[in-house]
Image (cartoon, rainbow, N blue to C red; front, top):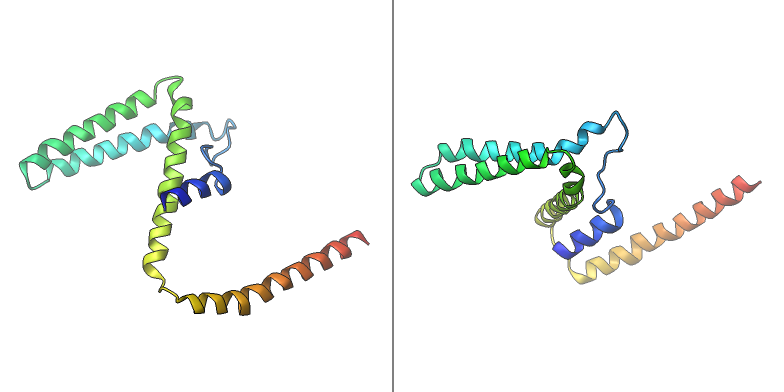
Length: 143
């Protein structure tokens, strides 16, 4: 699933590029990775203080401080451009994995014969219809 998520991210979702344009109006989006790390760090600190065990009360706020420090480091000049690629790539992979697991857990499993029937009786006629409609549209626009 991770390999498919990586390939789908590279091939269909823009890979390591940000989904936002790099124009003046969208300049603030360069700081989304640093804000995400800082917010995650603050959430870990808050939840770590309310944790039940002593280990959780020590480890979670320490990890939260590390994430807040990374968020501060990533907001320094020159660093946001360096962290953009890995951040957006991993975020897109995480979103694709979430959807993958969600769909797989929600939809029922089909038997092999059901999938073959669906492919031959539904998808093949739809694809032939798509080819016919596309060719008619091309012929119609060239007149």
